[in-house]
Image (cartoon, rainbow, N blue to C red; front, side, top):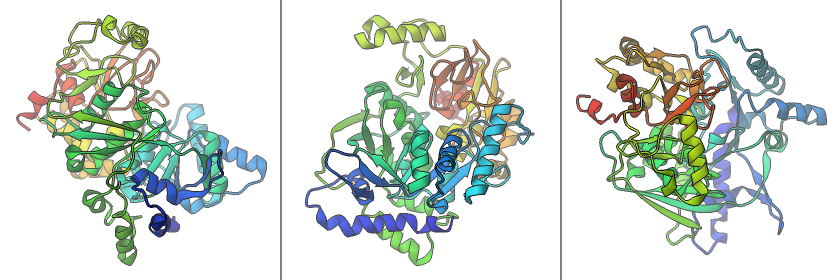
Length: 490
């Protein structure tokens, strides 16, 4: 992984050296885009350079196979990092993978990484969810272009990177060439005005945005997030915000780097050091949108009155404040009524009734959205001195081995276990039904993950998305409830 320290600086040197060619104001998205276009013919997609590609066991096998069939080598193994996360167990004996398909996926990644000299974060070797380990290592840096065969690659945009998910065939293109064919995306600016109330978090803000503009409201756009609340967010909160950009249809989401970004990256194992760090800072400070630059769409969200949010249906846009009632489908726009009717039938809820008080059977804190140490601390603060409802099974899953070890140093597992929650090993876990951790058919789960479509957490399962605080409070109450009352004594 030697070249990772220089890759982003090389890219940003291109940004600075070409800045004089542009007379009109540009957004941060345009600056990163312009610095990574290798070739552009009129009427054709751009040949677009990729600084870093992340790999996991589910979407990479066919890409490697295609390379081998064509007799191609991996272009730059040092610009790749692999980990296992999606299909692995999170039980204590996780190295015993019982599912044959999952075991084959993991072994295929191991062999491909060995064959092509790609670094792999395996069990007890820094393993974790792909969108957790990149930032915590300091590989994710401002101005970079980052891809992965995973839709939530937008997480890395929190650092001022242009990061997006790609399909398996595109994974193969990057493996072979370090480039992709890409159309220039549209740009969208989302401003979060005001500050969070007690019990409201970044997860609530992004759910509010998706509810406001819909699951297709940002199709074809890259979102830049701005505003007082965004500036006040930690890097982990910013990652939660950018992570779910894809859920409103965005190609990616990002936040301009600032001192919060630099402080987070400083001293990380793969971040620049010494003079390289100083050069990086100089380049990164150029990465902001110029005054008067163009955006194809602008949206403003007021946070001053924002409540904790929770989804009621089968997509992240079907969300509402926790004190509100499930909407009457007849009052929804025509194009949403049939979808809402099917959703209510699936989740076994009725329009016109409060979402608060809905009984839950399972609870989950984890995933690439909310599996970082700050998320675990929030859950621990609510659980301290309290007990999980006897009818609720509560999984708390760290996003990486590093997060797990930090939690242990802070004695968080003891808090979870005393409350009756299960502290698991790192992985994607109950975010999706690709491993052992599944919600049984007909059971209802409140989850800090990112998607709630039919069967997402297991065939026939019902999912309500919420923040870790709302999940923990609901696990204690045995029903969907606001965390505000549980935070009074924390």
